[in-house]
Length: 292
Image 1 (tube, helix red, strand yellow):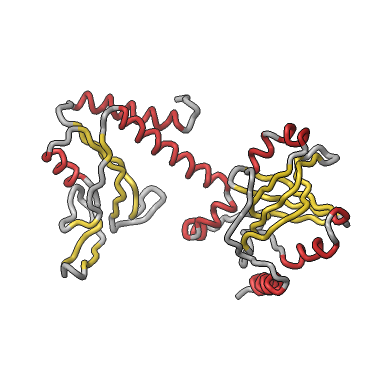
Image 2 (tube, helix red, strand yellow):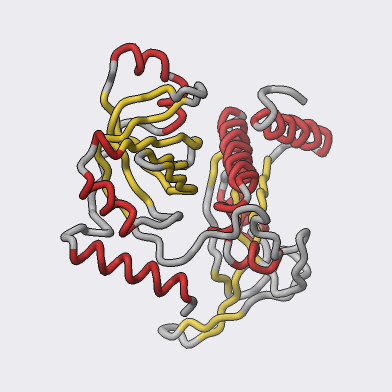
């Protein structure tokens, strides 16, 4: 256990001794950070009370004023705590138990600093989750490729563009599903555990079914079962299929991957080419604001 983890665990115990639950079941967030920033002027005019929540990314203390950088999925926002506006005991208690990486919620009203930075002046706060391990180093980020791939949660914290890629993928999948449904295709699910690996020339992963006393294979492709559905009478079907191939690993080749496979009875090759072109165009437009 590294020293910083020991220090954090000590602060965890301090919180417990103070009667603070470091992992409460409930949060009280009323707005996400993007909503606060977008509606800042109106919130300032109405002097509206609000609560935001997120991960503490930085803490700066300047005498009786502290500045906290709070981040949620939608963005980042500065939290300002004035020592003179909260009790001294509460102010000191906060720094006794808090580390960068902790999740907190802060309640108060929006506040514009002298430098014009949109902020929230906090009058109350609540620890939502105590972080027991430090975040990746601030200035150099997470550059170890092996660690980035094996510990994706750290990659997401240190490299915001990774989260944007995940969101882009989700938009593409949703757009393709919507397109196929509008074209009359039915989404189906076929078995992942199969008695015979087929549909592609690849080495499968093998597992064993204890009740049936037989070996089964994680599918390398959904093709054969999709074709059986055509035999059964379906005419336009597709599947976003999770497939597994026990082969090499590279950024372009992962043993576990998702593929889309569709079948259209009574259509010829020209129709399928046109259909696939429109499908890909739809996916691209979903992440480029309609541009191609």
